[in-house]
Length: 113
Length: 106
Image 1 (cartoon, chains in turn red, green):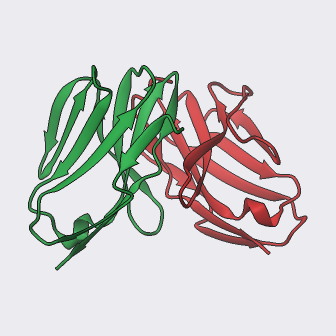
Image 2 (cartoon, chains in turn yellow, brown):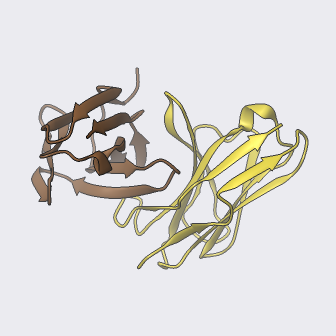
């Protein structure tokens, strides 16, 4: 069964901490995505990557950075966590930008206190 | 205005009822997706459509490209169908609706 695995289901961090959210896929997908999901706003794209070491800003990249050193792993970094970054974070991967094989991870609920 | 609009936002039904969730979009698309998200967060892809109709068990998805509209139907609804249903469209990237929270009561 194909999988996108996010390292943590729940995280609580303090304001100002550096936070790493990890995502690993085992489908050899080229494309990987990080979203955040907030009530009433749906999923919003933070960053995506279409190849190793490549990254593109999404709709709301401010306060975030990403790293893709290996094809299977896409990391989201909060350089200095703030309370307005409390949210559900979802990673996804796909075979093509057109959405074939789009697969989501189970999500990480991050609380910044 | 959002590029992807879903209705209703919330829906409560009795077990056995026929359910319809609607999705309208304002951009050209290559495909439309229906996703299901259960409490706890994980999202599962139900359908990917570019035309016509698809059926999987009690779930039916239709799309009208000319009208830029899709519907997700659930026949003989069951409490285990309770989830958030999300419409998403592909136009070089994925754009998501805000979701429809469905609660099916026994």
